[in-house]
Length: 194
Image 1 (cartoon, one colour):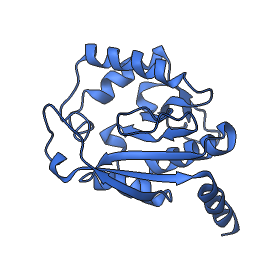
Image 2 (cartoon, helix red, strand yellow):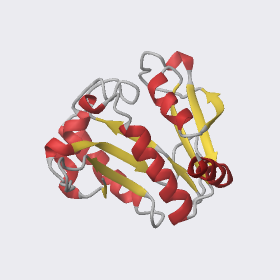
Image 3 (tube, one colour):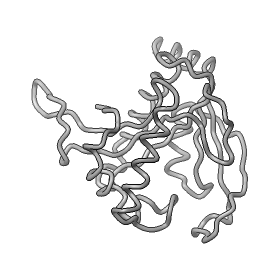
Image 4 (cartoon, helix red, strand yellow):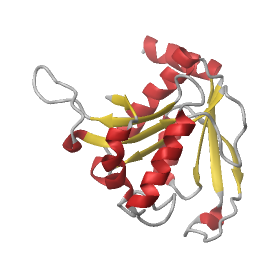
């Protein structure tokens, strides 16, 4: 279940960003509560720039014959992102979105990033009408790259990012993947006939 990110999710974001392994390819360390508060405010503001795009808190559905979605800390999976592209190496174009995902370590390896990302791609292309979605990560982040590839995103480029304090692995550069609306529709059509 994806719920639009709201102020009530701040403590969940703090939990997510307090694990240095979760942030290994982003900051290389855990973030302080104050840093997360600042990031939360920036995420919320940026997520409102294009109607329908933004950030979502992901939760697991309840168990049993009638699963009930609940926004409880024990069901929190992570943060899912589909804001307008906005980085220094990204286009300033409201029809291009930037896919991202960050999951609690206990949720890794379950296919949840792929599942939620597929839903965000569907939402972006079919409900919002974006024309292209990009995703970027460090070249050495093989797990994230695998998610991008299974979603049907194609490798576009490798580039170097300038860091004041480089993380281990940055010497291999950053990578960008993309999928456009026409590729998404073809992929959706092929999936529905299987």
